[in-house]
Image (tube, rainbow, N blue to C red; front, side):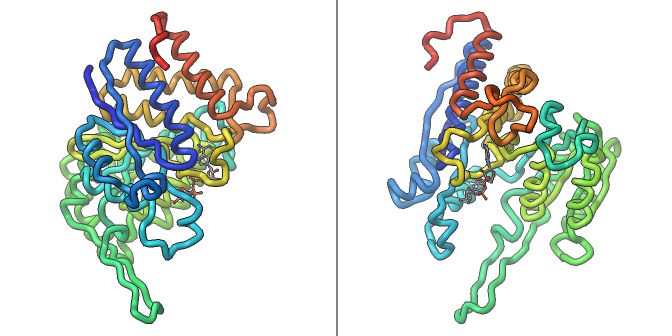
Length: 368
Ligand code: NAD
């Protein structure tokens, strides 16, 4: 398969982990004789520093020419400490999602048995959890009209959804449920919010087209509670931008660490694949970030982006094997983890690539 992949490492640990996602893709291309070409581009704080724009035109042009994007993260402490800065790294991310028409964020929550002890929740509650989130990405309060009164005493963000926005992501979620355990749970706040009442109405209409899929509706407050009370009850969770943002971070704790979760943002044409974590200033530059989420992002790129499930499974299984062998980064270490098995970002990255090379008896000398 011939594909062109744009790599946008971004800021902080984004750059530290994305290198391993890319190297993993290079190994897969070699093994399966795929013709993957790569390019890189800037976004976020680094791009603001270099050219004053969090999403330079050059990056957007390259993105539009690619078949898929492997992204790291954007963000820098200076913007977190100063909300009045008007040019901000996350504007690059919001703009590229909008420009590329990426309206659905898919976030699988998979629990590796070896990490059951790394979560703050009880292992027996987590074991066997397998949830696929569909979070709407281009509507809601994030994109509705924003206002701040002249005296700075009143502010508002409009929560707005259009029927077509709800319908197109609902179709994707119901289609996915058909290939999983056949259940969709739609999350809203229809008892209070008008936009949620429209959301529920459209979901109910789409559900009629999928009689083989069981549909459930939960209010966001109940869903947030159910997610940690009994996560195994869920198959596909479908929700809006704001509720999805919060619920998916809550769900990251089910998997033990932000460093273990990847996501795919898709539209009608191409996909954007990234770890769920940010640029993590607190650990940036220390070589302790977990690179698994970037490699799992590469797996999603192969599976969802290019339909290469076998290749994607090889990456996921490699991570599972390393966990079984006891290797951990600091964020997923438990009291039982042996000190010698706690690796830095680059050591864990090298180990992943070594494992992939061992699996594939082919010459790799030309891969750097
Ligand atoms: P974060 O996800 O960067 O970090 C949250 C916590 O998880 C931190 O304690 C961090 O050390 C830990 N963590 C995250 N990824 C990890 C990894 N791979 N390995 C080990 N530990 C990991 O969220 P935050 O601290 O709220 O935000 C930091 C910056 O990132 C902010 O500037 C924010 O705007 C930005 N951000 C960017 C994105 C994105 O680019 N998609 C997403 C969220 C936050």
